[in-house]
Picture 1 (cartoon, helix red, strand yellow):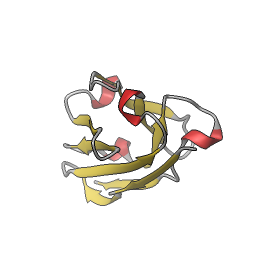
Picture 2: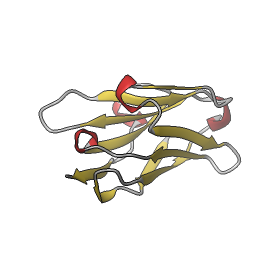
Picture 3: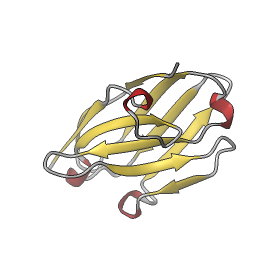
Picture 4: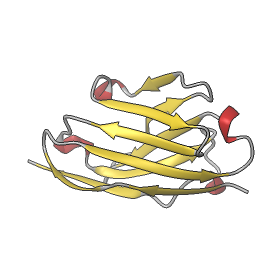
Length: 116
């Protein structure tokens, strides 16, 4: 059974930084691709960053160069370092297991609000 718990969201001014964390429990974390998604009000959910078990990452074009996804397989942790935050980054951010969209593979979400 998968359980994901996000933390680290908050209110920050444009240009600031935040680091999101996701504590994961489940079998074979170290070989499972993980992702950070976000959903802003009135917009569709989008994949912000994905990372393979070995650490290969890909990013949404609009966050490339500003966000960095990483993982610590020894601790079953996933991270998202967000720098140079923009107002358009305001959203609820979700940790996702295996890039799967069934309900059991999502955390509860953490709110990120960027003020101008």
